[in-house]
Length: 442
Length: 162
Ligand SMILES: Cc1ncc(C[n+]2csc(CCOP(=O)(O)OP(=O)(O)O)c2C)c(N)n1
Figure 1 (cartoon, chains in turn yellow, red):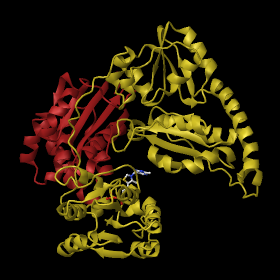
Figure 2 (cartoon, helix red, strand yellow):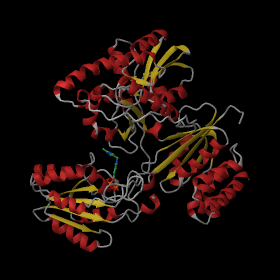
Figure 3 (tube, rainbow over the protein chains, first blue to last red):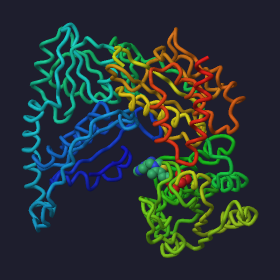
Figure 4 (tube, rainbow over the protein chains, first blue to last red):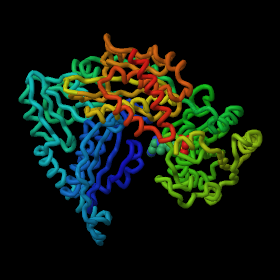
């Protein structure tokens, strides 16, 4: 099983696209959670398209109980059709707890490791043959979609029929308890016949889905007439009270977000690092972690955020376009290990200059305090070998690497930043001070 | 438990106040009492002082984990500044616990037990026996602070009963 949020799957797209061709030896389920409403994400991408793009089946549970059941189904589909299966979640499914009965745990037999190049060596000639099988597989999955109880019709009043999936189903049930519903639990490939039959059995057909018009686009291509949402509903997450205006074809009324913004904790080591950068009025290429919060007042000392690793690569790119600007990059310890180091190698290789700050708080704080290779502990909090960030940066070939505590050695830190910023060199400053939450996180 | 009713409770405050712990206790107690429960929350930013809210629903058929505006029978607000944002959740005849923040602050010695006190107050109006609340407190808190939290809970419960 693989699990990540939507942007995590983006990073895994390269192997994913070809894993669709190789198929599997034993069940392989890809659990991916989208974040409509961006509760803690940088975009609202809709991962259902990945199913269409990679030619793999997509299952969409509408609550935690179903999520548990669907995992089992997904493994069975994976083995039966020799395909990875995407279990597409959304924040409100993943961040909901529900009472449920646990089933019996079945531990399958470990299949032997066999050499099977026709299946696993995706050189062009072999991959071509596999692509033929992938298209055949899609057709078989289409047949399966017609039969599976994952796609469920609930016939009630035939005046209005609603096609829906995922959490949107739960909201529809709340807002229209009497409507007829076609719930797509197996949402790709589509069950065209079932959809057609359902459409015929109701006076008016409506599609209710969160984010992109994934179902809508398909059924319109089938030539089926359906009432669909105003495009304003493609943005943000749905709520039960939004279902009626959506179905009525109204434009979404944007409400001002009155939520209190998050901020760096009192005494956060990141604050000290950014304070030094603020004093020098630098342009700071940012990354994704707690330090992203430095974009907000009072610091306002972080000027770009796109994806993990961009703190390093944006420094290089921005400097190319703006040779005279005072530009630096920041990245966290976890993010540096994840995808910062490749950018650093690239910067050295291309003879780029600048200062990269690795804000090493010895934890992955933003996401709740997970360990990472630079902390010396495994994700299960057991001791392991610790990645030496300084040695790694030196090995990449940067000109200067300093390890310094921005809190305890604040004066020296500020002096060092000023010195490095004014040198014509590529430097890394590892600002090392543990996160305030570490003892609470444990 | 035979009645055919859904209980809708909204908890809200700011990160660090124990809002999620409060809703966890409530959801667990309801589950232990035999109800079907959903509990929804967003905790991405909760440790960093942002707005936090959590919804607990228990009883008969529940679909949405979110409680629509105007549909919460109970609103447990932990911070006056968050109140204007949370008020629209409350049903017209719903119970509003905002006035208990002041009472709680006067009653508790350790400000970190605000959440437990407010859950205690709420518990007095919910059809869940005290034994299930106690069991939930035991599951949620580490042993060394269980007794303190049970005490604070019962003080809150007493205030809520009045
Ligand atoms: C590709 C991708 N995977 C996962 C995430 C989720 N995520 C957000 S911040 C973060 C890590 C932050 O850790 P670190 O860089 O050490 O900074 P800290 O929060 O500790 O300051 C992760 C994994 C993401 N945004 N993008």
